[in-house]
Length: 387
Image 1: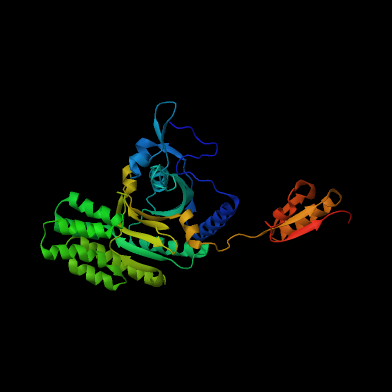
Image 2 (image 1 turned 90 degrees about the vertical axis):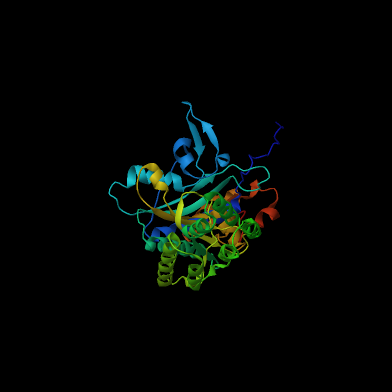
């Protein structure tokens, strides 16, 4: 084991410096207010959970879990996502009356990274879980809420791509017959490796018609018209049921007035094994990954309750990257004071704070480089010497 450098951090961990912290706080607050306006209630869960419960239910790869032992020898994990802990809480304490639940969260999650991965091992998610309502209306609500919260946070240009995990799965099983081969194609779609997908399809011993059906899946992107094209390549069964759900979802989205923000994409897949229906991802400029994603899942059943749910999670770091350099914080002003005018400076600061301004009070004798210090502030007031 090599010796650590003085300022080295654990792999994938990041410091948040003041400017970024303020931007994160501002955006987080705006999103939380938007979510509360829709009647969702925020809850919090422990950072540490038992591996045998939340750890195994989360569907995060075992190699990505941070594990440790408690004094009794139980294996604990740093929570790898927020959905599994909330499913645990809902199943154990909140579903006694069999009513729909609208819950929300904002917290850090932890996923161990390989050295060559270059991704954060700790990042913040903000999102919602709409539990115990299996209607398409609830799927439409969380998509509409995702759009509303992104707009309220200050992001004006984004797109939500919607698919259905049942359609591709039914198509694959109709043509390929085995889950092993279907899993291989799902992995290519999840990784957005469409070249690899085409090569894999062409390597199978299939009729030209079946190969063409599999390749046409990559072209199923667009508006309501795509549903008809999808119907042409499916034969029967659950695949058609998924299209009926998507058609109804489009009507819900239309009633919300969000057609310009939403499109269908039948190639959307998730590495989370508990997703069971409608899936969606949110994209914005400047970011090569989804800034948020969600969908319908059956995870709560792993905690002993028969309840379907849907929800979304937004990666706060990716949202900030998508927003670029736009100003999201109130500028800070500075009041320099000498000992003779200290009380006057304190009184002026209180007045300015009451007006909603951010104020730094600085004793003039405590600054070695005055020019460099004053450049940090929008405005500077000097109360030096006698009144």
